[in-house]
Amino acid sequence: MVASLSAPNSAIADPCATPGSVCFVGLGNLPVLAREYADRRAGGAELQQTLLARALARRRWRVSMVVADYGQPDGQVWDGIRTYKAYRPDEGIPVMRFVHPRWTKLHAAMGRADADIYYTSCAGAHLAQAALFARRRGRRLVFRIASDTDCDPRALLVRYRRDRMLYRWGLARTDLVLAQTPSQRSALAGHFGRNSRVVASLLETCGRCPPLSARDIGALWVGNLRPLKRPHLFLDAAERLPRLAFHMIGGPMPGAERLFEQTRLRAAALPNVTFHGFVPQHEVGSWFERARVFVSTSQIEGFPNTYLQAWSRGTPVVAFLDPLRLLSESHLGALVGSAQELQSAIEMLVGDPLEWEGASARGRRYIEQRGEETELESAYVEALSDLLRGSPAAGHRE
Image 1: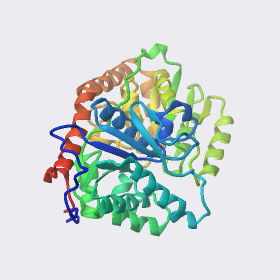
Image 2 (image 1 turned 30 degrees about the vertical axis):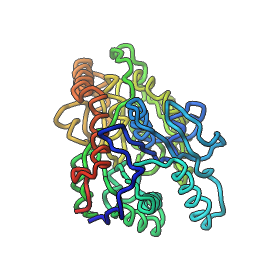
Image 3 (image 1 turned 90 degrees about the horizontal axis):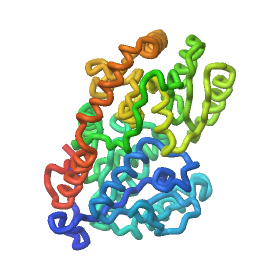
Image 4 (image 1 turned 120 degrees about the vertical axis):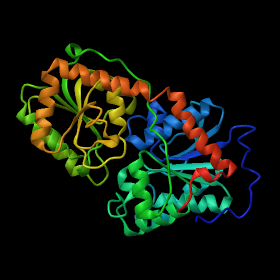
């Protein structure tokens, strides 16, 4: 069992009387929250944290964020969310900066937020740092699984052994773990002995759903360029389908700059490929509206935000991964297992209007059947409120 808090904390609000307060610890969140900083990289975890933060702010929770220092004023508010800056991404001397400024400034920002609940995502040493802060202050900590890799110690996308050990330590001391899918819940229990609560990913505002004839992009690829995303498979398909327009969106990841440059140069050599590089999160939706299919070549994910972004705009998904079996059983696109199958699936969906219209309609229907977004938000509110009340349903170590 996770060690219980030493004593009830008077700072923790009664959720039955008024909403509580929550601080999202996400150093990369600001580019999603504030458009004036949108020229910096952000991914799915940052999008999900920001969508939930906005939803809670609308419900009168006191919401804050600990974010990176990009030169913005400390305490600035966007969409009812007060932000506290920790440290600059490049601040400090390598090795030494792990403790100062990173650890010290992170804790200082969390202290200024003074929240009932701290909420973070993605495997890494920061989970231990947040857990230590929460235990010392008698506050609650929530960790949301961002990828299937977070659930398996052999697959962790964490570079240093030290940080992998700190992640395991922090995970054992987190009050509530939220998973995206039942398979993540099972993997987390099997590998780490942790129970978790499954809550569906939130969706940003749906866009337009143009007909096939109005879409000028044959196949679209969106993702941060890192090896596990396997962008070369998309370019392989583009090379074999020269009459189809392929578009790529994705910025470089730290440590994967060489892959970014290789992908950019290869895309430039293919006349039917347009490489856009980094595109701000709030601009990506319009590209899904123009695409006939969205292609995901990733070898591991959680429940990708890009799938939801595609289906909400009537864009079928062609992918190697099938969370909840929505491709293989619900036919919201096509599940593939090889480069040849990828090429064939793209050709089939783009070239057969009836197949495309069926997959497009099923994708839109799936989004509609997920329920109103307010209902999905309520699942998070319930989980956080249970945590404040100390309900066993919140989830503990098995």
